[in-house]
Length: 111
Image 1 (spheres, rainbow, N blue to C red):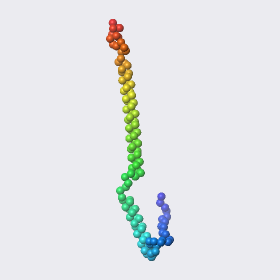
Image 2 (cartoon, rainbow, N blue to C red; image 1 turned 180 degrees about the vertical axis):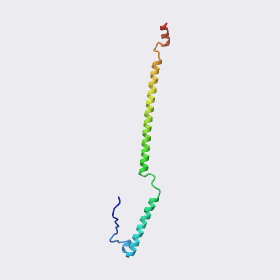
Image 3 (cartoon, one colour; image 1 turned 30 degrees about the vertical axis):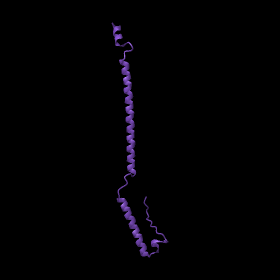
Image 4 (cartoon, rainbow, N blue to C red; image 1 turned 90 degrees about the vertical axis):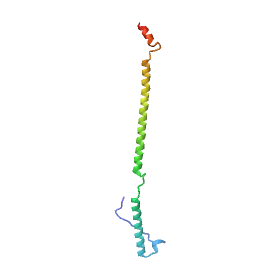
């Protein structure tokens, strides 16, 4: 989150850099550093976003899970339809068969 108070940190003693300079040079160094940080942040904000950010990964994962679920459901329906077709073929063979005697034996029995 954001703080209500802005805190600026500056080292008290520096062995290199702007620590051994005059107050004016220290202020210039601080202003340049702040400007560089602002420019870096602006560049980062305006740059092309990462194509695999959190939301994109979430959408991609949801799509993959949905497709897997649909594929499983379609496979289950196909197996069920195949089992029903095999079951229907078995019952039609049983209905169509006239036993060992065949239709001629039945006709002769009727005469």
